[in-house]
Length: 280
Image 1: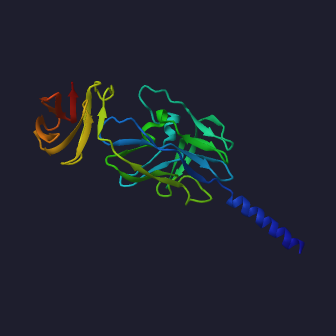
Image 2 (image 1 turned 30 degrees about the vertical axis):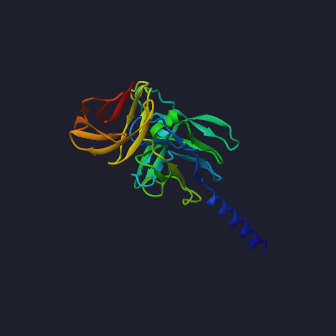
């Protein structure tokens, strides 16, 4: 009887050792609409990769961007911290922000680890280690930038998010559960199809607007300085006809590369890469 009891205890302890491992999850932050610089809109979605398991995890932490209706791909945002992904004029940090289970943040130097991928091995890949409860932070838009932003050409409700350590192609970490690695949210976006000056990044003075239309008969209302309604009537390789409060104005351009300006009342229009209007 004692032998059976001892065997049960041994088997129980063995099962704990076998199944103890890390478990990665994604925690999403609040989406932030970025300053408009042209067509469509860009939204920054911060996130954390947390080890919710009971063992440390050392990895590159590959991340797949989940973007409904757009091309999805997998990347290694940790490389921004380590310097493996270089940005001209920016010195790599060679360390990454880690949030402890109690919420405090420290910086961990990025090291390297061998990664088994398919039938091969990456001998020295950039990596950090997450202890149980810790999270790798991708929450600073000035550092992460485009690695955590989504582009939207049109208004609508979009499902966006991330998947850490995807099971197809880039699965690196043995986890308790491979089915909880993704997190998404629905984002309701209304596209603003104009930019009001002053805007140095777009090159607009205080009395200027840049605007565009997605389709014929689309309209936009601008304060110049009184409100006017401008609609797109037609567009071809050499002309763009707009309606200004019901009156058609034809603008000449060359394949949207450059165009001739035209005055109408207190307004001066030009069309090239989108429309520009100056008012007096």
